[in-house]
Length: 366
Ligand SMILES: CC(=O)N[C@H]1[C@@H](OP(=O)(O)OP(=O)(O)OC[C@H]2O[C@@H](n3ccc(=O)[nH]c3=O)[C@H](O)[C@@H]2O)O[C@H](CO)[C@@H](O)[C@@H]1O
Image (cartoon, rainbow, N blue to C red; front, side, top):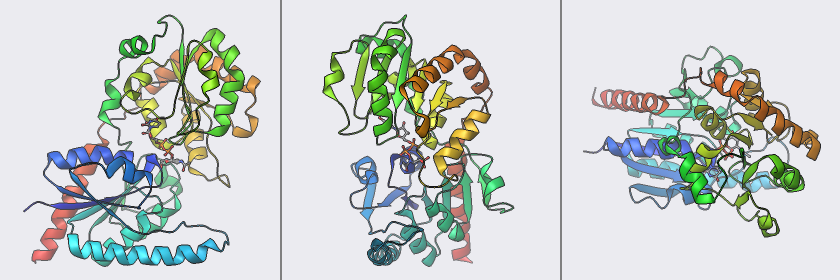
């Protein structure tokens, strides 16, 4: 009989893309895969269409640490989500579950816990998000992307294990020559790839457009703006292309870039690290100092992989001079990154899933 796994995670691409990597591996090893996400979230777009995966949706509420009337309705949505998750667990009877976090993960993890399914969670950011901090109470294994996470959270917790970034294999297969040819770019002029997180970033888009005439004097620019955030009036500039979101072309766009300007989402920055792309990071900061992207960006800056520009300092002049500074020192950044190992995380996760599922089976037959 096929072993069954439930995957969850959603709300942003960052909480889904590592699951796409695992789906591939799990299929190769003959697992039956169930994905529990929300009804309309990005996880439905990214996973819902895959024939090999059975997608189920549950209701979920946003977790806020401040008062809002929406907390009341979200509390009921979350409770409903937990009941739906318990029902799904009873029906699916999974051997293991793996969660990447995001709001939708909380009811799913609680439902799995109720049914005593072994739970593995994985934290993409240096400082864990609220959903994973809650979910970790029910987890058998807590995988981390950053080695430093267990020094600032889950300290002395022996369930914590450093895994590293779970990266999509296809991103490693890009070709600079192919990308340049397809886009009609000049091989001799440097290329800057600008990516404002999976949903784009209004603020970065605005500065890029303001700085574009100067920027294009020295660089060619690929600008991923986010869905619905392109401005066709800029199509007149040569050496500039804008996209809403890159799918199959992304590996080539990454390969052709001499440097990147990016948000500091965990997946994106580890992809740049793997490809040794010098980074100018402009983190998305929500609320206080301990937000995921800000700490990720500080960590990469301290390691010498990236330069950091805070959003409140984002003027045209500051942006142009930061791009020049990173480009000037590009070889230094790349050399430091070449010492960082980024392979092997998916294999580690597969072994952990296998181990937990076996121990579950063994426990059930005693
Ligand atoms: C605002 C917000 O909540 N951001 C969080 C979200 O970021 P976000 O969803 O932006 O996540 P990441 O930067 O981690 O990952 C984005 C993923 O989308 C891919 N991509 C992006 C653009 C594109 O055109 N094509 C494409 O395939 C990237 O290659 C990457 O694999 O999840 C991350 C991982 O938990 C967190 O670190 C971020 O703080």
